[in-house]
Image (cartoon, rainbow, N blue to C red; front, side):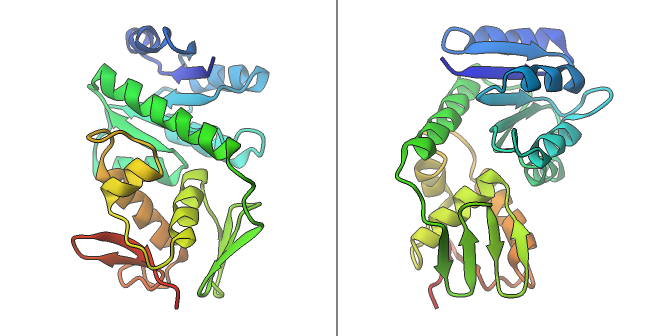
Length: 232
């Protein structure tokens, strides 16, 4: 059974999340980032559901700390928070979160997203071994250390950014809509998840690898159709 760690300083909210998930998962609860770190160091969970607004170390800082630790950097993180502005979502994804759900939330939506994230991780672990690197044009994706090189610079990707780049680079010249990526890459059922998630990850990737993120040359947008990486 998968283990989920819920990190939220509001005990009633944490309890409601635990109740909604414990039939299918082993659920642990921490009411602060400090307590969560202690739990993770004893036994790493398969998924973390994380609030942003917490006293002391907030969710963004906590996420950054985990992503810097080689032992825990690949644990998927779902932000569940009242901070719903686009800027807040971008900050959460830049810190390395996999997904973002705002409060108040629908329990069924949470359950579906949790299931999709865990299924994606399981699929990644059971697929055939990936090549050491993937090349498309000037892009070189190192599949061992999650770094991507453009010929001009080399940057480190978050696990989700890596998955997205690997998928696009594995299918050069193919155009993927946000909905298709949610379905094929994130494994979300129809009408689950938001295309905004894809747009924000694409935005963050462009900020990392493009010489000019407003005029991209690697990750191209095909109006009304989606995104592609051209093999040129």
